[in-house]
Image 1 (cartoon, rainbow, N blue to C red):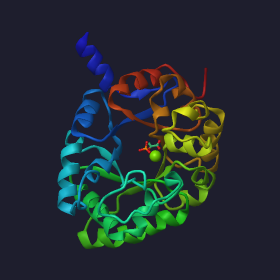
Image 2: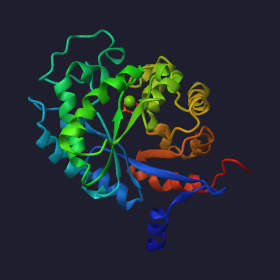
Image 3: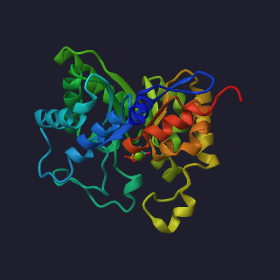
Image 4: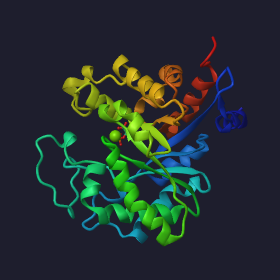
Length: 289
Ligand code: PEP
Ligand code: MG
């Protein structure tokens, strides 16, 4: 029975009407990645690199970042791993960057906005990802995108580094976690290979409800109509773009069928949720009842 369970976990997730869905993992530590592989993840859909930066007095060098990522991602060697660029802001200050107090950090300098003000910090991350490209099938994911220019600016730094390091240009994706990004997916899609919905932040910004404030919890509903409408709209606007969800909504089996109907073909979830998400996929059909 145990072997059967393992084989079931490792097997592909195909809907009743034959559509193959990728189930990948959200990871932050080596333990997460090991668990994810045991549970049948096909790769890493979201590596959050915040841990490599928080609690340090100086930013990591390229070599340190490569060492850290190699260790965290080791269990996924040879597979597709999606590395998200550093996503911090005034709510998670780093001692080596000049943070000024912001009355509204969630609407301030966070994610890619902050990185573009510190191009050396961003270049270090891009270099580290490119160094990993020998051992992993790496992709780059940009957090907190609101403008197509956010992506263009990353590519302007990335392309010269690829030449310098004699490596191919990795696939690049935008996080869709602001209503502005969802509503401009056509313009954003022109610059990327895939889109990944960060439904935690997308809900926070769409519902105008702080994701960490329990007193407005009832307004924060990531499985609500406004969120599904944004997902569907993106799918209608860019029907050929690979779409994934890496927010917590992806890990709730009762919503899997609806996500697939919205055109999502990759679900990135915490390691323990992989088996139940695969099971939910195997029990639903997208185009027929
Ligand atoms: C999200 O916003 O849904 C997401 C996946 O990113 P994070 O939770 O790290 O903000
Ligand atoms: Mg987010």
